[in-house]
Image 1 (cartoon, rainbow, N blue to C red):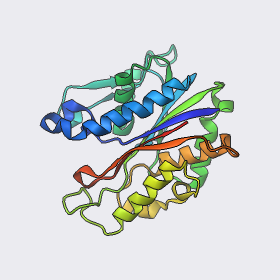
Image 2: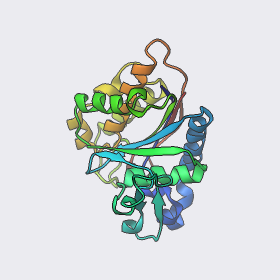
Image 3: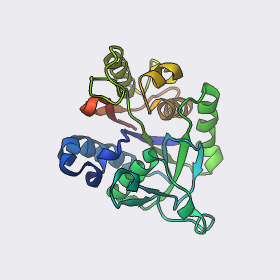
Image 4: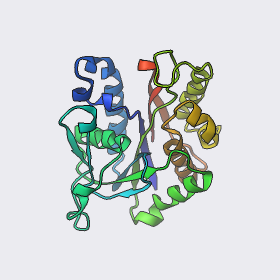
Length: 246
């Protein structure tokens, strides 16, 4: 059963060494991430999945490695400790930036339990989402209590200096995303978020949020649980959200 989930943004700038002199600008986001992840860990999961978009869809086993060297800093991360099956090849498996940031956040939180990564293609279909939710569910993993750390950003078009320049639709879309995260996606906005619109607005959280929505609905059909939006802002013209579902 999916017992708790944390939704966090995934800019490498969350890592202070990457942000350098601007690190303090995301202090509030980091603190919110710490709170959301703390709620997941407090729920006592037997297994924690870190979920984010990337170019090579599939599962990353414990010990998979990521690096922030492409962003100019000598900082490497590891997704938990290697298991017996991944000890020989984990160094060759590169986590995408989204999962690397997730691994960094888990290390920061002191998580030492079992963890795996799930990399999703940005333009995935509803079938992919449902299939992924099943694969990450109790029946597939054999774990009774499962937690999610869901990594993704909103629109990157909030200002003229944003990575995608200014798009007048962006603020409204981010507001709908924030409300969906605040309410466990009760109205289904995340589940129905269009892939074409997400690509136009450079949203990196669509597929991970849809997987979360599908998995949560499957396990919490009658009682959606408690959801909190802990952070919502658009520094650098990109929508960042932190939410906690328990």
